[in-house]
Length: 164
Ligand code: TQI
Ligand code: CA
Ligand code: ZN
Ligand code: ZN
Image 1 (cartoon, rainbow, N blue to C red):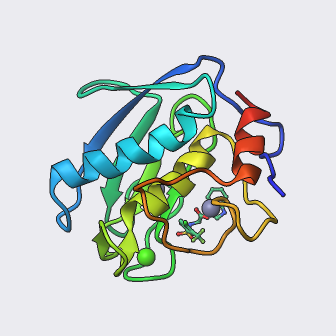
Image 2 (cartoon, helix red, strand yellow; image 1 turned 180 degrees about the vertical axis):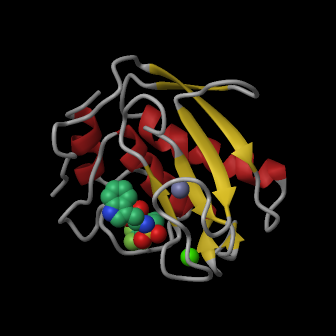
């Protein structure tokens, strides 16, 4: 079942800003925007959270595609291995979500599906750790999810509703 992070970090406000700071060369900007929007709405549709896109300055959740070492303590590792990571809710780096630019990001079933990974990472950015429930989105195994008609598994719904 779902797990929260130690100390239960969570956002204290329910309208969160997000900004896509750096795009990938594997997909169009519109595709990235769409995948991220769908991933955010999976979480906002079952909570009182709202997400507001910003285009400059600070944002609670800064999203970027990064190559190798990129200024935090967790360098990316080329194709496969680590796909992405996100920081639990906090000021500064908290909520920030980084994707490994060395992966083959796709909108479909080949490579790694950006919606699937973004939805999982945003769960971390909102305060969910890994679930023990194999059908959960927050279970630590990649499994393609079709954004069309996607419904958050009940374990993830319970987890996020325990926070927001
Ligand atoms: N990246 C790990 C992950 O997001 C990084 C990580 C491990 C992590 N423990 C964490 C991040 C705790 C926040 C909190 O799980 S990953 C999947 C999987 C990865 C893995 O690149 O291994 C997905 C990224 F396993 F679920 F498929 C996205 Cl969906
Ligand atoms: Ca990698
Ligand atoms: Zn990073
Ligand atoms: Zn994870």
